[in-house]
Length: 195
Image (tube, rainbow, N blue to C red; front, side):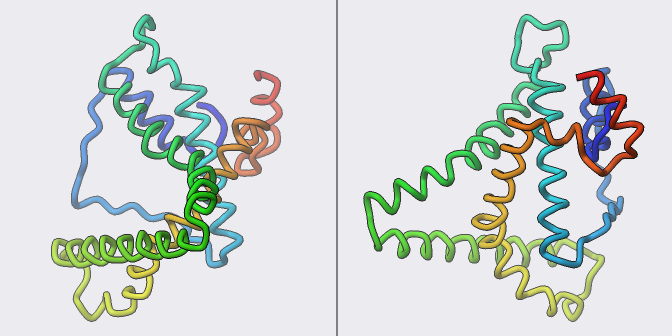
């Protein structure tokens, strides 16, 4: 196994490449340690996003090569989806903001607020639908979650996008996932010597 915090994603891609089917089990529960500070959340997301970039673009980047013996059309489309709707959107976001303010000046704030309102509306619809479909929570359980449902799209769409960009740049430029404190130092020393 490769070092780093993305071992679940790594093993999933390896299994799919080996011909195994990965199935969705609706009754399953997945729990993670949730950071209780903004600094902790940023650190966790940087670590996860760095490793996602590393696994997708370095380890399984051959998915884009039709001449590779490991080429798989389904895997390629899944990778293309990541590149188009995650990587490129994240990288182009600061450029988009610069363009928006350059061409629209202070009116850009109106555009950003309008987009933010669309985020809020879509998040509220998703929140209501998820609660209707979920049998794990009662309506009274979800009352305390409404502020998060309203702010999630704005927080994720604006603030966390810059955190993701920071993580991608750390990995692309500095290969930071190879020096991640998530794994013991002796394992890192072995991994770094293999670079």
